[in-house]
Image (cartoon, rainbow, N blue to C red; front, side):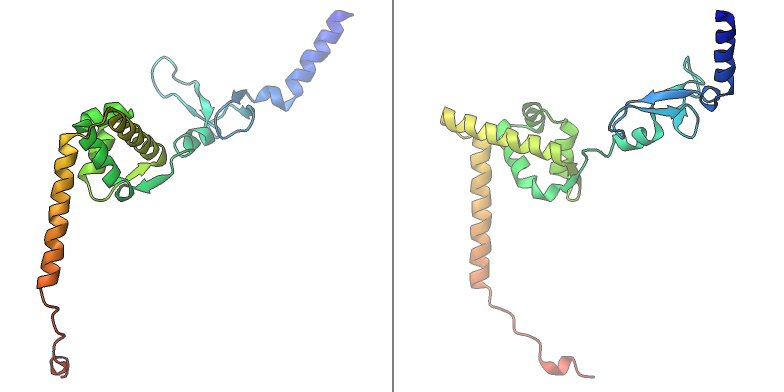
Length: 182
């Protein structure tokens, strides 16, 4: 009698559409809960070479494209440039500032070197928190780095020169109206 039941079960399994299609769990970021998806090229990427050739990746296609976009809101570097420059001056070098803030050195170089760039909010947050911590350390120690003091003096001199030149330079008069007549 058990042989008949087992034969019926195997017959039902062979007729069901689920058994014809291989399925696989995806636990990637685009699903709220693990999802069972068909293990086909429509849903998964497949390895094309190497020891895993022909096997599917662990995440589905949607999760692969989702992965880089989750927390990558970007801001303009101009917004944080003065603060990053102050952090670099307080630390002594770009490398030291990168080590102190636990940010890649290339990110600090990109922010301080180029006029137009964008940086992730998380990186900007790390840099600003590092600057705040460094300011507190300097204040507690009772000293300000010499490079920062020199930079502040140069900026004050430049601002004073601009004010003096604005006061001494007369405001230019508009051109006579006959220049614009034809």
